[in-house]
Image (cartoon, rainbow, N blue to C red):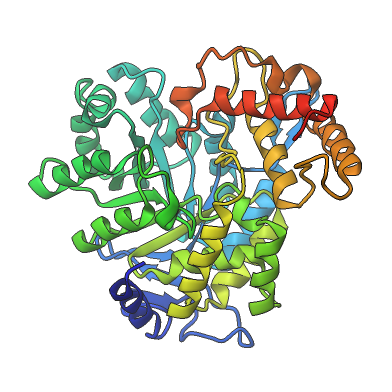
Length: 450
């Protein structure tokens, strides 16, 4: 990060509650960690909404098995979490028709409908990846209204645009008349803020900013992937650095919603050496809190989404944003050092979004990647036959892999059909990574590691 960028952020952070006048506390002035908990609020300069800096991402609701063995959302647990979130100042809930095999919106609607509509903001998406026909896309829009038990959306997104540039955008939203339809819905009051979520390269993002600048499509807000690793260490080819995306949106005054602040949980479970350095600096703060504070320290950020699966991370995140402490310039530099160290680990850049599922051949793609990444971050990764405790690490990995992923769904069953590639927002070369993991496992079994 350039020095002028650090100064810009640290100057804003020095203002009470991080970036007045857009920041406010749900109960008054900023408090220290020792004082009463007060959710950090941000004012949307476009709409005037007072939005909680912590948003609830509904992509990772808790799941249970129903009587038939099917994975379904645990509605009772969702209700409890939503009640706690709203009671502690969280008022932004982000979902999609594509999340959790189409179950997320209904669960969100049931939980939120138990509260006054004025007490929360609903964000959902036109996730027309499969059926891009006018009929199918419009049906998705009206189905979302029904599932969420509302007659308007506070924030409505064109879901995951970027890959394929304008050509793909035109197919999904222009050629089928959906842009005109959404403008009509906004004029009718069914959409209050219209924006998009982005995954793609810098030149693709530039095209959508040119649309904004020309007036062809004025964006009320934009959702980007941002965290202290992707800030400067995205691959730069298939995924743009968050620093660039932030700069472009900031100079245009476009409010920013943040997704993947924890990189699918990886920044809550960083490698042991990195965790140790963070704990030395802030013994009483969680590793995850560093990532959330990084995002919210940037003043253009309206809301930081977290996909919380149970009460523990919810309470922890409420604590982080309820006693929010912006990062200093020196702390931002420290996180850049941690990000550089993270890049040295052979992790798969999987955020466990499950967009690649179901695999037509039954492979548990995210389960395989998550198990592999966890072994690396926890230091239980067998790297060489010369390694201390190699035999113990080898056995632990193979046994835990069989427990985590059913044998018939493991990496070695991938046939390389490539069906998953177009669905991955991280542009992971999924078949290649599965083959790499399969070779690693076979090397473990045959004792042929270097």
